[in-house]
Image (cartoon, rainbow, N blue to C red; front, side, top):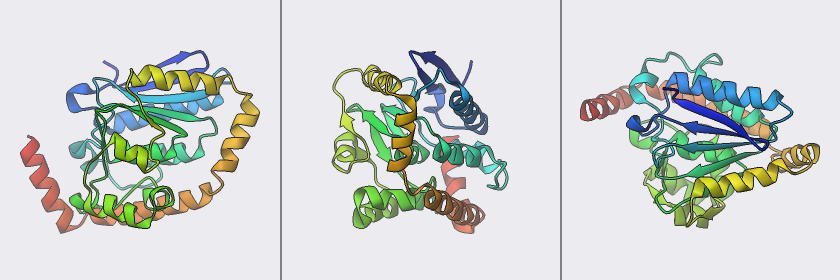
Length: 246
């Protein structure tokens, strides 16, 4: 069974997370496959937009912690790091459809999407501090720009879950969808795919004028993240988490 499924439809590359027994938690192989599908799509002139979603009424529960803890240093060759910088470097628009859990990277990757839709089952959370870690995917820069510094502090420092209505009020997502959110998001992605591609990509770059700053912040986060992973504080919390989940 492929943990990342991909199909191309009317100019849209549809990428789905397919590990429902683990609530679509990302392991290193999934990060690598995601990055490969995105890079391939970037170089394919038939692909005009990307769409991400999760199988089994779940977006993603975040990182597979057991796998992640054995993955080595967070350097430029690490599959997670490659994926994060690939998100920033994308020229073609990215759409996401969210159902169920969107934890950790499941929320922070949405900050890099152009259009995000969720249904009422969606639950977002960034529990980095709860695990004695720090934010990633440049969320420490991007989230305050989107929701304001005080609200960003609340979401990151307390790490509480929040629903789709709140995510929409905070402009983290575009819309709460009452119908099939995957079909709804795909319709929007297909509309993007019909737009003049050069104009679409140039406009996207203009909107994302601070991408160099985003990369710098992402790199800074990775330094702190790596340090926190090795701390006694985080080791105790991860041991407790893994004992509870085993």
